[in-house]
Image (spheres, rainbow, N blue to C red):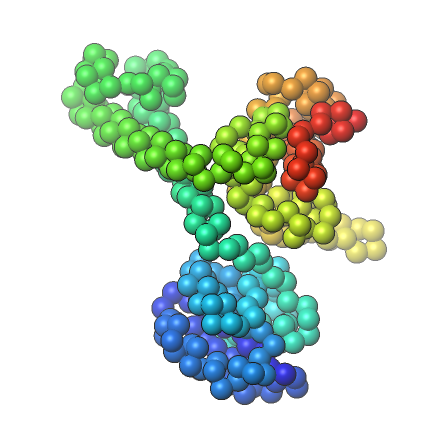
Length: 337
């Protein structure tokens, strides 16, 4: 039996194949061309137990190509992999070997390989979030500019409705008005593109059972339901509700030894988009759900507002896990019992 590890970079990758005794059977740096990588693996195909690909920003093409060619592919969760400290030498070959070695031992931390069609929709949702953050930066820039020049404030909703001729009525110096119009033009363009993405996302998800179920939870509307559904993928991949909560970064990460705290754990291990979604849901739930408000106030009285909002986000994450697994709407009594 053989095992392969691929250390992937922007324009090349290092491929290593080892046997059951950790002997290196193949090692070579190859350009990022699927045909060349398949040719390198072909002589070992019948004996290969699996191929490990490092989860970098550009793994889609390689994982999809290898799976289409019939290989058993594992996506390495690099955030959960740590090599031995104190090594005198480490390079791409050593990294690729380490991936194959972990696969051979059966202790490789893996990530979820989202199906290509589902991944495209999920990435649309992520693109919407990116553009929304850019628009927020433009709006904040306009708010700051007005505060500096006039001492007055303007709400974000009013800024979104502001037109170019309306800027001229503000009585700002010519150069300042030009700067504000530049921010305003970018804001309008971003809003147009965000609307297009939201329309496409609604077309893709509004008929899904998971989407309709998530929409019944307090604080979870169209955008958050779409994000949670697409980022979760198949809920059955989580063995228990605690695994899902951890993936959503809703639980603390700590290291202890002999009942003593030994520093912080890996806070980045999990899905940052789900972490954001449930914090947002918690903030909205405070406004519209009395039970959520009471839970938050109890936690806040014992700790502080930050810990309380995280606790409420954790509650909602656990509730969503059961809702997705059982295809049942939100039950306020079950959640806040």
